[in-house]
Length: 145
Image (tube, rainbow, N blue to C red; front, side):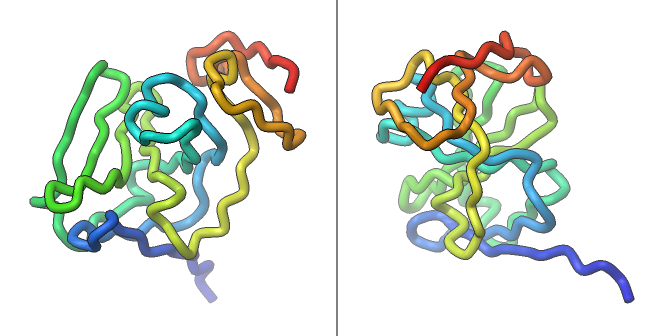
């Protein structure tokens, strides 16, 4: 019997853009950087990082807008409702599908990144990275809760 990958359906706020993610993400956690906070209009962003082949747009690809402030991230949103859907991170070869856009997904955060920029200290026992892990181009330095 073949090993079936679990899949989860998600969408933008209005449902015009729909997608499926399959398998398991490479990482899950919270980003506290100013850029993510500003983009998400919240004090922290819950991320799920996937390999590009694990994510498939199933409806509304023509309705996806893109904005890139830096070449590190290409942020994607629905042109109808403005709902944020995902970001492409070409340097990492990963896509950040916003956890809130995948309602049935069992989100299990494992890390906080860019914690030096936090505006909402969270005491949850998870590692707090000053910036990013070394393997993602950061210092790899952890900070206190």
